[in-house]
Image (cartoon, rainbow, N blue to C red; front, side, top):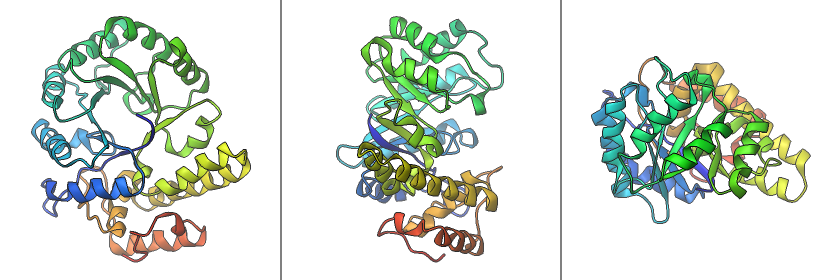
Length: 305
């Protein structure tokens, strides 16, 4: 997995039931913006508010209607290990890889405990790569990833890497360089993408790649041309986008609502996330326009709710 990978929303009808019919158009939209893959059933996708059956339905829809040369990763983590193993086994022949968060209520307290949990999930889908999803701000599980990487690489045959959603430059760099860069370490903090570039990151997973892929690709291009100050200015625009939506209604629900402006109505968000009204969306558009962000949303964007 390389370049920008969008953490996808779970599209819903107005009654809160899944809207699977929109997924082909959703995938085509992402592909048209040079997003290289979808990370399904993750934090952005409200997985904690979905049933196991709904999570299965979502990955089935993505697996059957994916764009050509588009990488699909399914998050299968669960507080119930049996459910996680079931989700992993179901992912074979539908996803290109699986990924798992650790349990976040009763948490694994040691690397050995975390490794057991990941091993059980990975061996339930042995034909596809397994990734660990590291996001301690939400899970409360904050173990050294370089130590986990060394252990997992020896004991999990289909282990391929980490979705690293924390800004810890020392540990992240060690993971990138482990065994001559043999594992895929994906950076997962959108607001700090520019800071991951000097570290050597080449793949990123995040929710704002649904909206601002062209801006992030320009950040990467500017950095590669040695124009770091200009890249940082563009990163500030992405941060402003996140802060604007977060202040209006909380980013998870607001980001999902914002997709309506691309002609993709993702429907309501499930509790505790909010769904923005048209008036709230127009307030966000006005603020973003003043900061010169609108031009980075692409030709599909309609700047009025």
